[in-house]
Image 1 (cartoon, helix red, strand yellow):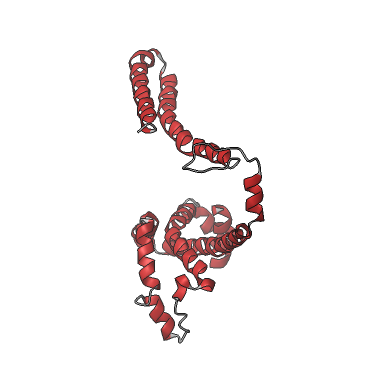
Image 2 (tube, rainbow, N blue to C red):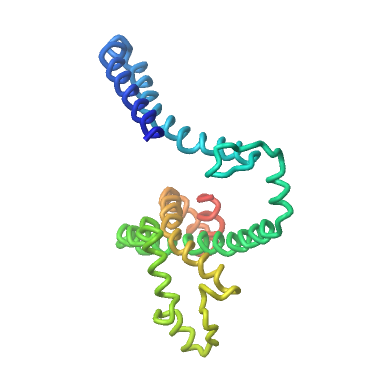
Length: 239
């Protein structure tokens, strides 16, 4: 492929230069200079990958925003700010922003709250903390396609969510959660939050473990209760 060949050539040139520098330049350097040199070499390839995969497409996409882009037409004339004016005049833009805001306002507090609560619970049972931490991280490592199929079943008429709602005599909306307009966004946000809770639990657990035990002991000597220890010590120190 024409796009893959420059990448392969660049990798080959990089490996050749690295071999030559390792045999010719590195032996003449001091140890500290050599360590810094090798560090820069090993950072060069990921940095080039980041530029090629992230920065270049972003710059090209920004350039395309000023053009009348058609993938089937090689001629892409510049139209100035017309695309931006069309977007701002489209009511779907504002509706999308509103839905994104609702999604974030539901998901972010849910993830942070449940992640904090779970981390505190793991700290209270240190014997099984590592096993529980691993189990909580599995949804974050699971493929998004697999999670999608799991929750499609859970939200379906054959799934437990539907039967749980029926147990509480909630009305059948025919389309259920995913296809019902008032509930679809929150159902999807819950799946996204559930998949991320393990990651934030891990972050909060590491933060809690980094707090010195002497601080807890001093707080208990001063008569602080559990809520005061959390609000005055744990919460500020992990932020």
